[in-house]
Amino acid sequence: MELQRVSNITIEKFVCDYVKENRPVIVVDAIERWKSKHVWSPEYFSDNFGGSPVQVYDDLFSLQTVTSLDQYFDEHWYNNGKSNKEQIPYVRWYAKFKPVDFWWSDEAFMALSPFWSLPYFLPASEYLLPYCPREKTVTPAIHAFPGKGLFISAAGARTRLHKDPWASDAILCQVFGEKNVVMYHPDKESGLKAGNRVVDIDNPDGEVFARFHEIEPDFIDVLRCGEIIYIPAGWFHHVTSRSNSISLTWNFVLMSRWASFLQYLLTPVSEEDRTVIKYFASMDDSK
Ligand SMILES: O=C(O)CCC(=O)C(=O)O
Image (cartoon, rainbow, N blue to C red; front, side, top):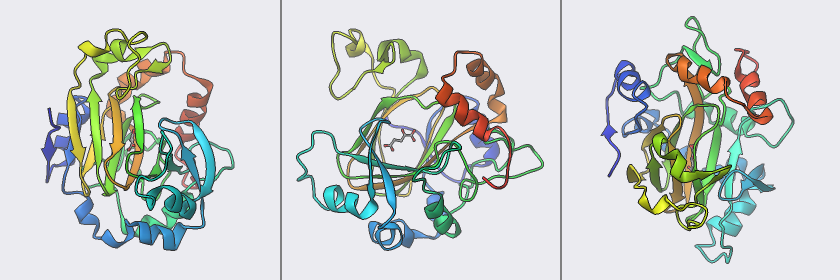
C-alpha cells in the first residue's frame, strides 16, 4: 500500500490528522516553496563542502570512518555501482546533538540556512525536543534539533529497518534523487525485533525472526525528489536509495505528544539517549 500524499495542508490539520493519529504521510509541495533548487546538488555540495570531513556509516548507525565528502563522492557516488562492497557506505552528516567535539555538519547547515526553512505544515513552537515553549519559535534551518543531518547516499545504500530513538517523530526531505521506503506499524514490533536485533527485511534470518514472513508492511512507496515524509514515533522504516540521493532530516517531539514521551522517559533509557535528551531539554539560542 502506498502512503497518503497531501498538499496545501494547514499546521492544525497536519497535527490533528497525522501527529496526533501517529499516521505517516508524504507532503508533496513544501520543498518547492524553498525556491533553492540549485543548492541541493552534488555539484553545489562538492564546490562548497567537498573538503569537509563527513561521517560515513554502515547500513544502520555504526560509524565506520570519517572522510572528505569529495572522497565519498569519488569512491561511491560517481562509481555507478562499480564498488564491490556488499554494503554501500552512507554519509550521515549529523549536526551537533551532544556536547562533544566531532565532525558535525553545523557549519554546512549555517551556509545552507538562507536556502530553506521550516516546512510550512510544521509548528514553529511548542516542542519538548528541542525544548521550545509557546512564546518562542524554532526552525531546523537554524537551530539544533536531535538527529538533524544531511544524509548523502550512493545508489543502493540503505538504512536498514529501525525505529527512531527518543520516542521522536522524524522528517525526511528528499532534495536530490529518490528512495524506496518500507514501513511497519509500531504494533508489529514483536515480530520485527529479537532482543536488540531488528530484522533485515532484505535478508531475514529465519531462525531468529521466525514470524517475520507472516508480517506485511503497512506501506511500500517511493519518496520522490521534492517530497517530504513524516515518520511518526515508533514506526519501523527501511529506506533504500534508488539513485544517488541527498536528504535533509531531523527529529522532534511536539508538546502534544507529552504523554507518550513521558511514558518513554519512564522506561529504562540508555545513557547515550539520555545525553541527547538532556542536550535538547533547554532552549539555548547558542545551540
Ligand atoms: O533516509 C534514510 O536512509 C533513513 C532515514 C531515517 O531513517 C530517518 O529519517 O529516520
